[in-house]
Amino acid sequence: MKNVIQIDINADVGEGIGNEADLMPYLSSCNIACGGHAGDLASMRAIVKLAIRDNVKIGAHPSFPDKLNFGREIMELSATDLYASLKHQIRSLQAVLQNEGACLNHIKPHGALYNLAAKDEKTARVIIEVINSIASPIKLYAPFNSVLAKVAKQAEVEVLFEAFADRNYNEDLSLVSRKNKDAILHEKEAVLNHILNMIKHQKVKSVSGVEVPIKASTICVHGDTDNAIEIVRYLSDNLKKYNIQIQ
Image (cartoon, rainbow, N blue to C red; front, side, top):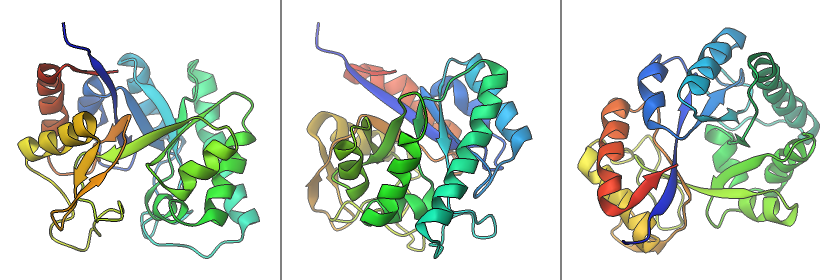
């Protein structure tokens, strides 16, 4: 029997799309918006219940505190103010988790915060300080070869390298801007091939056609991609054919 590769499939949830009940059965982890760019206590509670129902690991998805721009624009905040905002967002989710008898598995920053921390050490250090302020060990989902991942490892925070199922990459492993028409992969077959290349060969074909080394142990399907349900269902059905187990 061939060796089985285990991979985590995650999705960003609680962002107002309302498809979580359909997504959850196909995920092994989720990242719950906790009030920065989207979400409130009611949405967190509802989604935590769904995650518990389907035995899905729960992560916090904190953001710049900017619901107006859905956390997709960089905010000029002091390190102190960013720390306070992130801490408040994560504590809000932790309070819900405590009430539901569940625990926090990981942190995954959202949007502009994620992209900035991938290259800016000051921002990365704030995120790691927040993680280290939490009593129990918390994993971090971060891009391969990013500043955020390097700072986390220096601080002995466990990192899961994250790659994106439904997004195209530039040669520097940054994501193609959503302003470009080729930013998002919609065809489920193309998404599967994209993932297989990353998992099996540790390479990703950039939008320019150049193959770039990458490592990934968790794969994100964006919950707000139009056909997200179709994609996760297709991955669930087909990854097993390549000896890849979602876990």
